[in-house]
Image 1 (tube, helix red, strand yellow):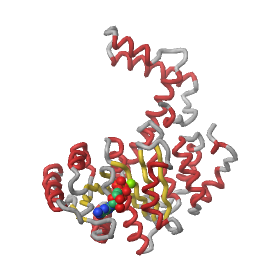
Image 2 (tube, protein in one colour):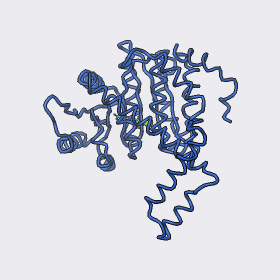
Image 3 (tube, rainbow, N blue to C red):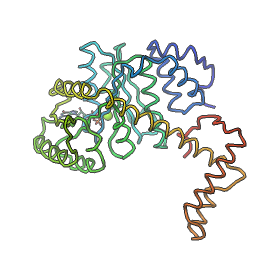
Image 4 (cartoon, protein in one colour):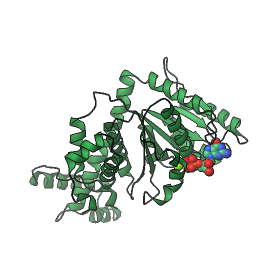
Length: 345
Ligand SMILES: Nc1nc2c(ncn2[C@@H]2O[C@H](COP(=O)(O)OP(=O)(O)O)[C@@H](O)[C@H]2O)c(=O)[nH]1
Ligand SMILES: [Mg+2]
């Protein structure tokens, strides 16, 4: 039992989180990271008292290779949004780091100037192993910050794998950052980053080769995006995040995209985000149920059958699915607890 299970006064916690109390927000996000059984109640409470449809929170994802300047850009954006009186929540997601402390220390340093600002909440999030956990936990953490009424939520994820790119791609607006001289960056582009970008940034424009990188990028975007009438053409913007140069133009592009993203387009984005979140919950529950099948067919045994050429994988999958659904019926079909998918592996 995680320590958070002790003395958990949920109604009080939810009430204080909605009032924007940082300690309560941090505690709720810890529950999210742990896939704590109490989340069921938390999410129900947050939904029942949610802001009017659509909500006022704009979600912005930032992704790109390590070291490209995501945290520095995030910090510069916080400054810009705060200057016009908006409140900002930040989730720095690092799937490679097993703990939320160490590896993200650099991010903390880069954002520490905002630490005492009551209009800013910054949280590093770890995924503790299972990547599917990210698809569930990030939207849930956004939910918590939206309920607290932040005008903007910024999600920083390292754009190295499909899963991380997908998380950023589930934002209302996704910013893809690259920097000159990063051949790897261009490689990363091939891994699906082009498709998720609404706004592209060539950061470190104070370095040689920024114009060439921007040109290459514009060319690739031209190939990747088929522009429909009234469609969005992703801009490519040079920035020097460390000095704030180009940040005003980035904010302007974000505003323009948010304005373009109204009605069905916004509903579609948010629908995809909620859909991915539901799917992650279902998959985690299924995985946990397969693990609990005792007595019953075991995944390892079925795998051995498939390896031995005695069974095809579809038949094996059918056997597991049938056993899981039979066990579910016995238990009254009730999904008893949200499994801790972070600790499954
Ligand atoms: N020359 C230069 N360095 C930058 C710029 N933006 C960020 N940096 C530096 O690049 C390093 C990595 O930045 P960081 O924001 O942590 O990158 P992240 O890993 O993408 O979050 C830090 O040392 C920053 O100070 C920039 O525009 N120009
Ligand atoms: Mg960073």
